[in-house]
Image (cartoon, rainbow, N blue to C red; front, side, top):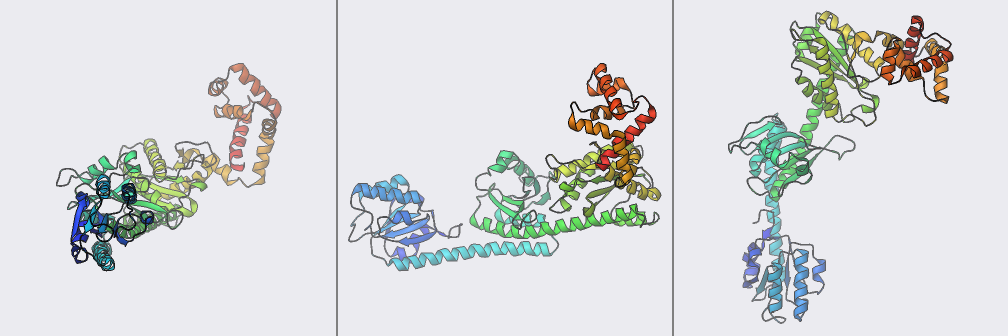
Length: 551
């Protein structure tokens, strides 16, 4: 019995059907361990063209030809088709195999066997095919046994790690679960158990599975061109369409060669892993949504401040008496995660772990936002922690693959710090400010305390008086820029941003002062106003801000 579920040429010659023909190997005996995929009997001269490879060809030689050139060409065509062996029954056509035939088989490395007695080809075919089918059945049974072990492990509460551990023990090689883009999720070595990516314990041989993966799969080229003998099986699920791939099961031939039964077992295990990962994603998403619902209820006053610590504790958030920093991230509409929010929540949680403080994170998919409560340890600076939290949130979006080329970046807003009695109001203020900030120039993060004017204007964005105010205040300038160059609106925006300080405005715009003075004079003429008047600058600042929310 061969390891690939068929039989070898050597085994086929040992079976009674061929053994009674007194088989004699006359060329390429070193190839007798080739696997026989099927048996074919025939005499046609064009028979090689009909074969697919792996066949044991039985013939009396009628189609081989009588000329040495024809005989050599016949053998070359068989070798090119990749057959397992050529078996020729001696008799009326050949009393002994021609030298040209033997030499050609030896040159091509094709096992050539002559039968000294007549055998019924039908009986030989039936016997070998029965052996092959039995071999495949034995492989399926072994793979099914592994599948049952994996199933019992999953039903008993195990997850992807336990499935990989069973596979590694069965194959005698390390097993890995990767993301679709090649990042390692889990690794397992035979007899050493499974571990998540990031753990660095070495196995009994001194080289843990993580080190093996880094050496054989860690580089981009290794992921694109798997090592020889590796088994790669896609784990389907998630994404757009029922067949989308979001994970990959990998077996590497490190200790022993991989075999067909290993692929069978891996394919069965991949089906289970798809269910395990889908279940984990659903559970993660439900948990993240549940935390998002709690934080939203807290922000909207549906959770009393006296009850909030206990409810947060149930969710695993126990900050003690430390002040709390509310942070809200709102995604651009086009960046909403189509494959579920669990991936985003998981990625952001990993990034926030580096902040080194208790964190409660929840999602609100319908509103496209992530809500966070971050405990500030004694001595922690609010601005610094808000910046670190914002960087972690943005990195989580990138890790989850939600960035869109040319799309708007997510908006992150940090609210005011406080205890449980005030953090709900801080969350609500940050969430509302995040909506208003989506129309503002991009920044790493916004301080909700500095967005009150923009929040007020955003709330009035649909009021006709606000649009009329914008048109009355800067309308002529907008009309100029639509028809003429250079555009003057950027000059006015820079002038207002620097609160009317002309020297700083010129430096910010990289203009000489005379050019700036000329542009400001032209703006004053178009608007019919004095740009040196503080009240005028205030009105223009409000109009420019309002335009971002009404445009």
